[in-house]
Every structure is written in C-alpha cells, then in structure tokens.
Amino acid sequence: MNLDLNMPILVVDDYATMVKIIRNLLTQIGFTNIDDAHNGSAALAKIKAKTYGLVLSDWNMDEMTGIELLAQVRADPANAKLPFIMVTAESKADNIVMARQYGVDNYLVKPFTKDALAAKITQIFASAQAA
Image 1: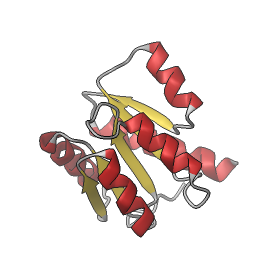
Image 2: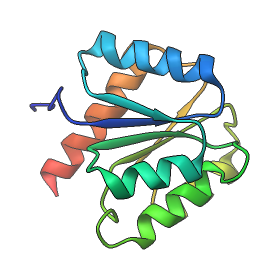
Image 3: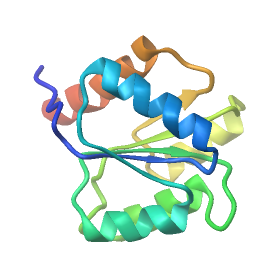
Image 4: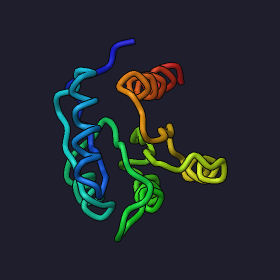
C-alpha cells in the first residue's frame, strides 16, 4: 500500500499545542504538506478553497465542533468522500457511534503515538483502495 506523503492534510484543533503535536507526528511519519485551522469554521473555509487528502479534527471546539465540521464536509458532494479522522479525549462508546453515524472514517483517542496515528491513516487508505 502506497501512502501519498505529499497529500495535503488539514489538522483542526483549537489548542495550538495539540496542532503542533499532531503536525510533528505527521512529519515523523513522513508527511510534508500540512495545514492547520483553529476551529471548524476556519477548517471549512480551507476545505472549500483547497483539495485535501485527509482531515484530522478535534471533536470539542468553540464556534463549530468537529462533529459539526464532519457533517458539513459530508453534506458537500465535492468533499463527501474526504478521509476524516476524529481526534478526541472522549473514548465514550456513544461518541464513537455518533461519529460513525456522521460518516467519520476513523477515530483516535488522545493521547496517541506516532504509530497509532500511522496505523489509523494506513487503515483508511487501505480500505479505500479495497473498496
């Protein structure tokens, strides 16, 4: 399975330190084209302006939550299939079920390692290629 390490990735989190951590992990995996947004509204504007290969979004943010962002992305035919990983400190089954209902591709509970992140990304693209 070949991952495109140059694909544009959008990291969405209202906590600048978390953005930096995720950005560092992605860089360690080998990704080079990483943008970020500090909330769902800013992320939506970026998604409309640029074609991303993957979105990693926090769940709990002001203005627009990660789940609201996911719903908006899925509602847009141009981005309905955009790979989307929800990143959250919440590991409650209800949240995972809700995220799945909204069409999330994968779910990552903080804190996580580079290997866990790489595995989730690989999983998404492996199943996309199989489909």
